[in-house]
Image (tube, rainbow, N blue to C red; front, side, top):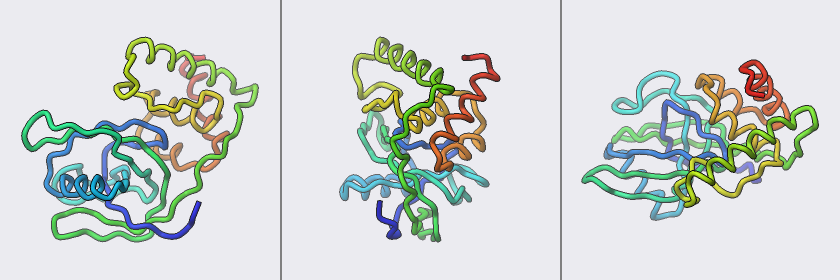
Length: 204
């Protein structure tokens, strides 16, 4: 992956987006309506970063320096002035510098973080793979339409990083904990930490 800096609009949120994760959004502020229009017209992603101080609405919030790009997969406007989005996380990034436009939209120069390598699940962590397969089967049986599922295709139940990301989304973890896991560049370490949580909570 190229290390060349990119320019991204940033959406600070009270949640953490992982690569491959589904993030539904309800857009109503003018600055984010403009951002979505720009991204859709250019087929560009925007960046999602966890808020460290401030709120999602109003004055631009402070946010973590590591975030994840969001691709707009689908949209709908069921009520005037409110846009419903289904977004999917793609690549992670690190913010190099940021600026705030007159309308309050944050733009940042970012460097992409390498995507997780395709690492198989070691035997001592195999319970995580078994668990996520059960989750996938349950979700697919409840919702036959892929575009409406809480997990986005393609599924990768044999890839350590993908499994770790999905379980981190589903477990009742604090946002700082999710942020730490998302930022880890070693997928096996991420999965091992998830495995520890599952054992502690007696899920496996």
